Length: 380
Image 1: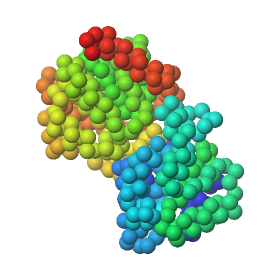
Image 2 (image 1 turned 45 degrees about the vertical axis):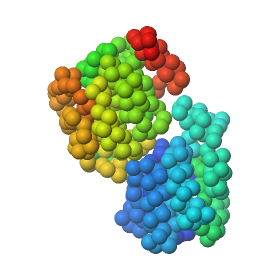
Image 3 (image 1 turned 90 degrees about the vertical axis):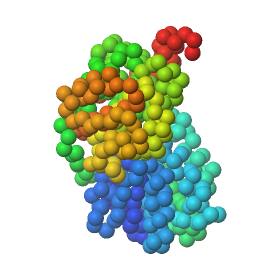
Image 4 (image 1 turned 180 degrees about the vertical axis):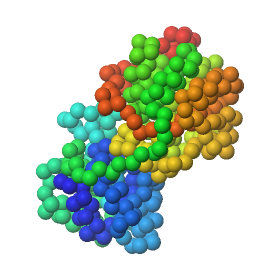
């Protein structure tokens, strides 16, 4: 199925506002939406999926037309509250269409963080009272029109409808290409970070290519990656995991390596961390202004920086770097400082085509990480 055809059928049922958070399963759909933007469709990439529900609700209040919210199935957790307490027909009754990329579908091979989410995707929608249809590469135009006709009938009852999209559903068409203009390559920046933070430090890394690149660089430098907790799921929560460690043992150096999209998804963490101000936590935000791991679509905050937000929240030490030399200097400065610090690193969208994935399961990563930590902290 061509994503552009899907999008046209969506327009035909009166939807002209599209919002959400990008997903690799929906890559071709996201490309089509970006290319359609500013013609006859409004498109917004929000901080998180729940915010997209809010935006679609506001658009409906203003126009009387349902909006479309797209998301990876991992984002269902973020939409449950606004769906149940705002959009549901027993509350405000705001219709909208969900387009959900189905990662971890039972019977398919996927990354560990998607396995359980894939099992419960349909059940979550059923519990929330959202009827749905599943589409794949074999779905015909006539079948799609019937699915969207069912969705329209739900809209007339002030209800929501979901289209679950299997992997490989959409054909590759015209690709949306975008560059951010930054020169520093992220993997090289991560190598510099690993070389310059204390070898006694423990690292919590965010989901996506950051964790994959740290995995390979740490193995190349030190022969293992046992001091890195790779937060391969739960986008936006790595900084709070890092704080949980930092507050438990103030003598240990904890480094959170975050992404800009992840930091934006739950930006309230910056205010919380600043208030707590753990002196042993270094927060590094690698900013390429895009959701690169799921197709390189610009974030809703692209072109902006986070270090000044962190400073305004109350981080004692913040800085912005754009070159290898600036990064090395910043890492030396924070090593000699005493207090919560943020280094924001502006990087390009480049990544290796042969970048691998962790060989261990998420649980194995957790066990190895805790084994090293407890060996050095036998009383904990």
